[in-house]
Amino acid sequence: MRCVVQRVSKGKVLVKSETVGEIEKGLVALLGVGHDDSSDDVDYLVDKVLNLRVFEDEEGKMNLSLLDINGDLLVVSQFTLFADCRKGRRPSFVDAAPPKVAEKLYEEFIKKALQSGLRVETGQFGAEMNLEIHNDGPVTILLDSKKNF
Image 1 (cartoon, one colour):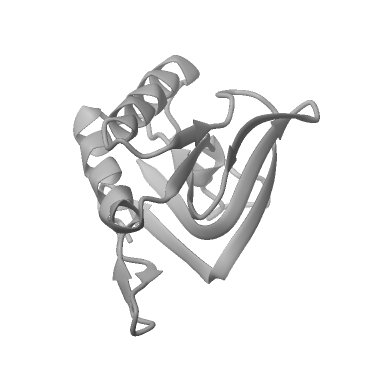
Image 2: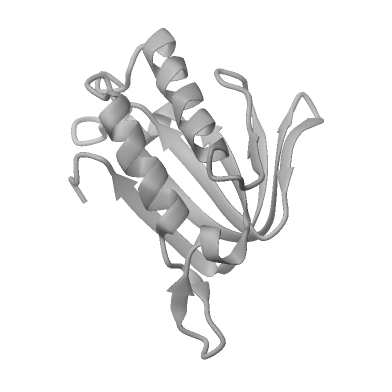
């Protein structure tokens, strides 16, 4: 499971020009599910995202997590995180999970994130979406539950 995490001052996801999820200060998590991912991968990434210390403390150091600041989380499915571009010019998505598997694990990620008590908003699985991301910093972190990077 892969996740691109961006620290934001605000974020919004739209489907057909209609806002389906919107947050203020917090994190946008673009989430990709691989064909061999499981609930263990969900547990690892939810914990990592919620506890990632990317917010500044009173001394200006990145020492605070989303939980520490009681921030918002916007979770958006993005299978293209599993694009393999090593050969040719057209990405291959053979490592991405099939939609039914991916949706199940995406929903599990959201459910577990909600257990934190934080405000969690989402995109719409499988939909064409437009994102408005106000990246704060900018701070962008790549996470992989298999620890490939």
